[in-house]
Image (cartoon, rainbow, N blue to C red; front, side, top):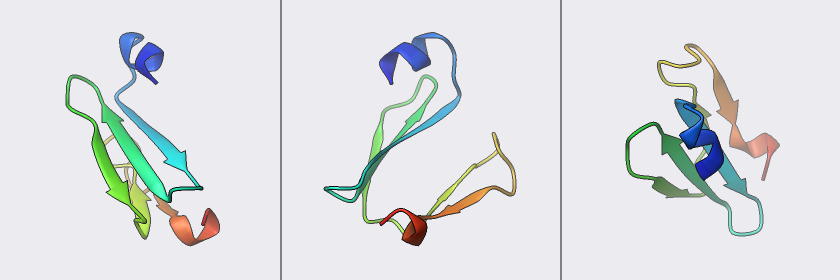
Length: 57
């Protein structure tokens, strides 16, 4: 994911199905870690996009 950040991505999700954790990467911001979230938002990058995590878990 760090390589993508270096290339300038604004939002990235790293989803771990085994631990049911999601790491959210944003440009020039610290990584946030969430355990078993219900959904992920595209925020202002992908407006109106919501990934329902029940499809993943």
